[in-house]
Image 1 (tube, rainbow, N blue to C red):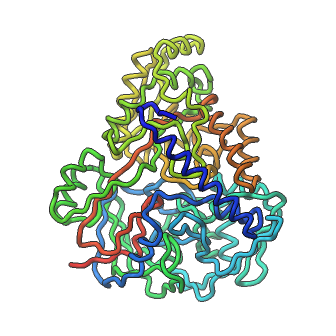
Image 2 (tube, rainbow, N blue to C red):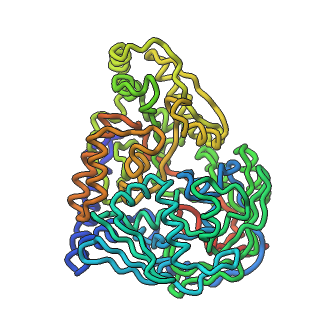
Length: 557
């Protein structure tokens, strides 16, 4: 198949995808129970460097000492990982918090805080024995009671957790080191849900959770995990400082992706909120920061030629998209959403926001080409670019020129640039757009209020199962509140199916529904570049789920 850019990338990815599906079937035939085979093998992707190279790098011995300084785009809205899908929160808390499972070098979930995991043959009972000797940052030992409290709280807050617990009959503590999930229906992406790190199921002391309930942590004394670094102090809009957790006990296995052994080589990690991109770039060039996050792609040429800076382009794994509010007076109207979809020309938005060329890819798939879930279902409604159709749909909707509230930010320059181009295209066909530009934390806050917006822009990082897409795994819960009966039923079927072929067929129908019901509009695939000091040792190319700060060190600090 030739895509809209005239390339034949769809054809080559189809071949790779069939090979990966064969792996799924072969793994099931090798003796894994249907549920565990589906959960484990369906996560295989190849966007990172070869596993052997990653494992070889991670076997090197690092240098202890020094303070790693990371320039981030702004103050995180919270450091309570259970509360939000925001990548900024996940990235900052990654060194502090841990989950029961983690992603390995091929993005398969492997035990982390769990020592042994035993699923029943029917996929309904999941027994997890915890690692012993694990201590929280406050000195309390981790027990089954802490895990029970953490998973239960996460399930009350997270859309994916809520979906999981709809099929949980019982969640019990068998003893101080063992918990068991007993389901009344299979849940295919169970291990993926427990390994995910955006709104991840992080484990915290029961004493902290009993006091907080489901409300966000509002005191630094509550920010306690089991990770290799612990919070030392922070000052809003100035710094978040973490120090090595001296009682951290790494796994005995070698580092494997985001799992296996973790080593806290650094004395400290400082996350420094710097909303101005130019200041982050200048800070990286002047050695004020060792890492600068969220730098737009138009800086690549300059930074790649700057002495002392390493610039590396990642494979395309980000999905830029607009979410539409199904509970707003206008976007609850299908004809309005169809007008929005028809008005947009995506290539110009991608070029303005991400730089075009190697940094972008026009593609209809909500799961990227590099994963086995890729499909072009609904592609006839992607990049429509039909102004006459858009005007027709606005007339059908009875649109009266009421300004539509469009949330964006300049803290992510690519969000702002795409939003401005979209605003121009929408207003050209008759929309009236109220572009509300705030910091990212305010966008996150406002998008949770169904009465405060009509459109907001965001992106989705790499996901390895469709249930990790917020509009699917948190359908009806995530801002936008897509909740058609047919799509909710499909999402439920996706979660209960365990065989890959069955899940894939359901996922194709869901993606087609995304294009016909329009809870969101995908702009395209985007790649980013990583920028970091050549003083850093231990850097890896597997970064799609965040930077593994725990295995970094400084060579010349």
